[in-house]
Length: 368
Ligand code: HEM
View 1 (cartoon, rainbow, N blue to C red):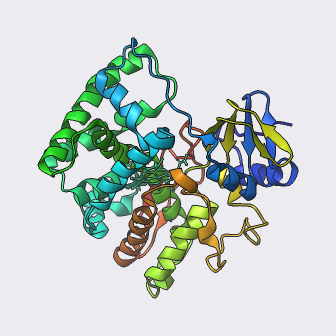
View 2 (view 1 turned 135 degrees about the vertical axis):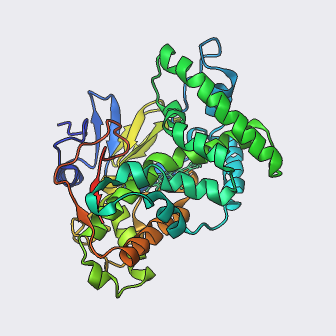
């Protein structure tokens, strides 16, 4: 029985994950030709297993990728392993640590300025796709001209991570990557960072990583926040928003799964994942495992271990921006409650982007 999700539209992921957790917490999907791990225990074991590597991109030295694209793909922490990963993660962390605290209310105020929020607007376009990158760029002190280019072309930069790119895709992307690379190099030079490929690639890596997951988090938090009455919320504090964000991350994670490739045989749950086989680690299913979370379907702010969710990954590749992301979402909640009396979601049905590792609404119409 293969029930691996192959499309988000019109399906109920929770029901599928609960069934998988009960009936097949680890199985081989013969259509996808990969293993699928759903239980919290198996997902955790794989994320912590040094023989489970992140898949690395195929780079054809004689192919159409320009030098900057090759450097980027060879140096990103997200897609490197072992010693290379330690060095690239170190570079990413050193830039991340230099991000100053940004006043999220100011940035949100600017994004919503000029919009008649009462009439209804698309939260995805106005906030989801812009707030995470603006928080990073502002926190790093990027100038307005570079900010404008980065925001306009970020979706193109992110597409460099797509595993299968046509020659045409690569040729369209080459000049965009060169321009991003030049902006990052200039920034590093002016701000006293090394300008080696490791540093430049991982600065761009922060831009790439914040885009989809940050947008998904802000959409899902808006949805859960809108279920509460703003008058009641007005009497709450940041601790409440923090709990709401944490439970949203567990129950409605933007990132649903991540992949690993076994570099040696891995024994798990009586099965052997053989060297070179791929495994899909379903973080969103692990978050619904009743062995860890009591009544996992319930959106429960009071459950005392909601922060044990696997939404930001675990182990050597875990997300370096967990606390920045949670802070940004928490500040977004308090901004909305402080400035608007009602949040009304204007849609009942949602269409989703085609990527399968993240579950992202294409549009989220809201009035404030
Ligand atoms: C400001 C926004 C963000 C930035 C700059 C960022 C950055 C990063 C980076 C650099 C990595 C790679 C770490 C490594 O491989 O050593 C990573 C991994 C990851 N991030 Fe984030 N991230 C952001 C937001 C988020 C959000 C909002 C989520 C989910 C809610 C998320 C989920 C993950 C996950 C699951 C991984 C691990 C992937 C894996 O193990 O395969 N990130 N992030």
